[in-house]
Length: 159
Ligand code: MG
Image (tube, rainbow, N blue to C red; front, side):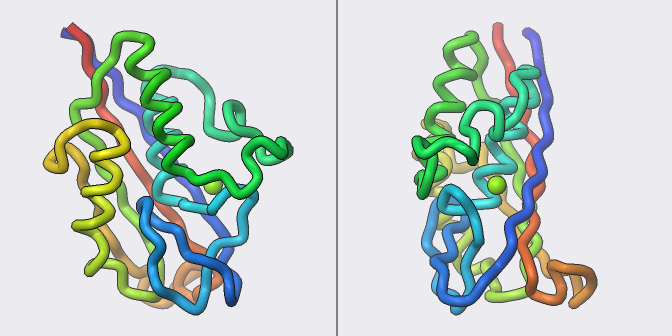
């Protein structure tokens, strides 16, 4: 069996009165993400981890933020397309693990549903999708509530 591992990282700026799409869900919040797409940092980091595992570049190369095609894009569609690339090359996902750093709101209550949504989009088991949430203890741009960071790793295999 062959294995590939990839990692991804994404940041989006927060601004008042925008929808907060995170982990495939709309999370109730006064703030949302400034972005060309829906700004779902968790999915963007995950897509980069999957692409990175196969050295396929990054999400910006496949879905450029200069293209009208991806304006307001639902990041779940981007993830679906990335999974088509992964499976198209004969690879399957072993597991993915995502960490979201956000000062507020607290997102732990939403994590089980995020895992449901992402595993469904990726057509894998919920047990293969880990999502963890942290604050940065009021430190840095994340701690000041200016933005949100997400990191992801993905392990792929093929027989
Ligand atoms: Mg992004």
